[in-house]
Image 1 (cartoon, one colour):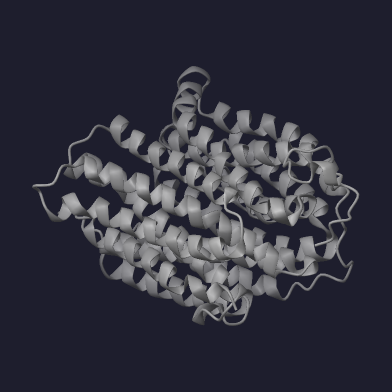
Image 2: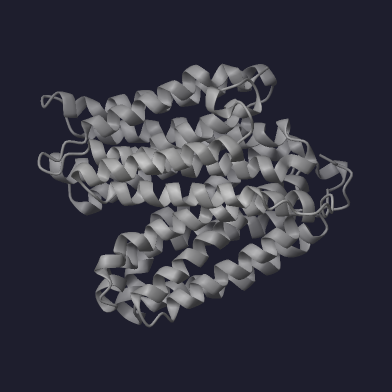
Length: 450
């Protein structure tokens, strides 16, 4: 990383994340991540009203699956764009596509048009996710990267707390279209804050784009879509879709991820694999936790929502704690500890399921621990990725990190759908799988260091 870049603040402000020269980029990054977080949470809240208004229940699942599938394509394209053209152009493209998707969805005359808008949103958010990490990572000096990624985690907290209520208010007062259009109105503001700083970042190598990888991205996208479809089915059909989706994702991952990722080779490959493991553990457990709390323990939806919010808060707290840890030795100990805390938290969530004599509030306590553990470990993976990547490979490696997240999470959620029995509403196998993923991440984490 070239720390002499003109956007870097003078030495007197070297320890300040929001110092002059990078303040606008950091504020814009927070605004942009909060916007993406609110869009994801608010749209999930509003989608039942959307499907009812557009008579689109048959396409309900596809409205979510299409976003995931196209985000994989966006991540892959953004890796090359950042390395060869710079993060400014990639961010500009991502914002334009994301905005187009919001407008198409907001004015959609049919559910089909809305699904197309959601697909564009996924494509744009996939590009933005990579470009933002690379661009702001080059604006902010390496010693401040732990604080930067803690800031990124904190940007999810407020949308997680107020997003569902605000989305419900918008739907009830202004109609479901206002959810998409409100986010669209925020895009120019985030762009005005972020883009000027990113424009001063290096423009990449200028080499010709190699689009051969996009064929594998299309296969990865198809695999993710099949995995999502499998989670919506049952019986033999679900197993067939799961097998085909897993095969497509595996073949694409071999080409799109760095060599050695699938066998946890030391260094960068293990960083990328661990991101997939811990993201999948959290996503699969979070998807079924409300069902456990409401159906098994009799909690209200409001109380179940509080539990999810508590996990989001402790995730942010854990991220802030890891940002304050100094020294290589301490950070080496913290990474496996964070994964282990997350695994232990999932074990506590399972305790009242295994024994009816135990109080159900243990599940809340366990979920708080899960959030804390992931907050301690998740941002460190992003810090390590930038540290282990040459500047001209940060785009492709960040793309690989987020691809691992998307593909492993898709596979875990699909498998969770197969493990879950709707008749008994038994979620224990899903929690066991999530706990195993977190424990495996803890066991493999020493391989991050050569």
